[in-house]
Length: 485
Ligand SMILES: NC(=O)c1ccc[n+]([C@@H]2O[C@H](COP(=O)([O-])OP(=O)(O)OC[C@H]3O[C@@H](n4cnc5c(N)ncnc54)[C@H](O)[C@@H]3O)[C@@H](O)[C@H]2O)c1
Image 1 (tube, rainbow, N blue to C red):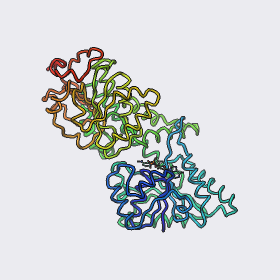
Image 2: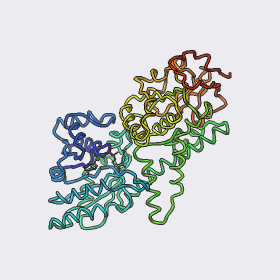
Image 3: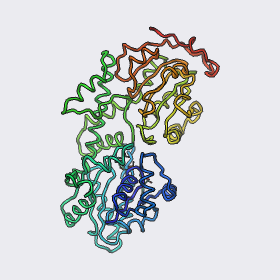
Image 4: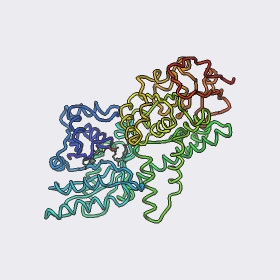
């Protein structure tokens, strides 16, 4: 069986790389010429641990190649994956433009039987639209409209651990509908994933509509757990409880489990925000409401700004003359993906309030600048107060506060004494609950996590910064900070 993957982004590249590593001959198609040229030259346009090595090894062995030639690509595969983006439209519904454009392309070039496998996250009913688009082209070409089947195979990989997730799946969801090609499609999907089912079957077979909805249900459930814990953390904050104890206390219940119970400054990424919105929108279109999912998204939007709210509580709303350090820009560690990253909203608010921002991310600084330039397209002058630091310690120089937004491993155990010496005010707002409040209290650093014992915080009295004061001139730490023991 030969494989074509249409869309060479996070999902398409990981799918192509992993299937080629399992021995299949893979062609990856994308309409982005720069991306394909880079891939042909051995460059990988995204940061995903292990992906570059996997792609280059299989490229060198002749098992995977990259093209913008749709005719050649569609001809190659017995199985054609659709792995293009399904961004949110203005009204929150999933924009199927890319998916349906690929479907038309498949119909335009298809010659013999093709199994079309949809891996993009799409609303229920999309497979029917894909079928209609392909059939339309076939009829137009005077061919039989039955030369293909469409199955659903949603992807559950996590960015940052995508190769491992693909190669060691918890489960593989495959939706195949009754019909002319049912047996053939089921056999082909079985053969495709046989390597993962040798010990025991990980494939969960179902109909196409159920498979399409399963993906949304999974993301909505995970997002809801995070928003639930964020609300719990905000309550713990005012009650003097510690959400980290609560997390352990409930996670130990086997009915609940430990995963996705971490409170913080909100989720981002290319999936949870758009998929929860799309699910709410699908329900609305069918006269239903999804109150839990809608609330999940609302809570998250508020939570993304929780650190700014706290900063403003301590320093006042006018941040002119303040310098704020930010550690972590990507929406999560081990990726450079900036889609819906909380850092974008946080930095926007800080800059609009007049602060200078000194940010650092181990891999996402370049992508972050691109994303922020888009966010500030209408008020680009604010970006003059944003600097990307060369390292985490450089970002702290003369800072009035540090906001930790992404839990990169190298932020886990920093040298707190050195940090304190560098900062104008030793104040850490930890959006990922990385640090021990007691240790920081001992160190004389004002620390606030999300839902962590406020009573341990040694509050700083932030003196007003005279308007227009240049930070570089103010190197007298002691005069700017008084610590209430
Ligand atoms: N990123 C994730 O972690 C993840 C996980 C599971 C599911 N998904 C879903 O998978 C889908 C793809 O997501 P992604 O993050 O890989 O997207 P992406 O934006 O990284 O990649 C999509 C690629 O498709 C290409 N493309 C668009 N239209 C095309 C066309 N007509 N022909 C050829 N190429 C075309 C784009 O140029 C781009 O390179 C989405 O529906 C997403 O929701 C993503």
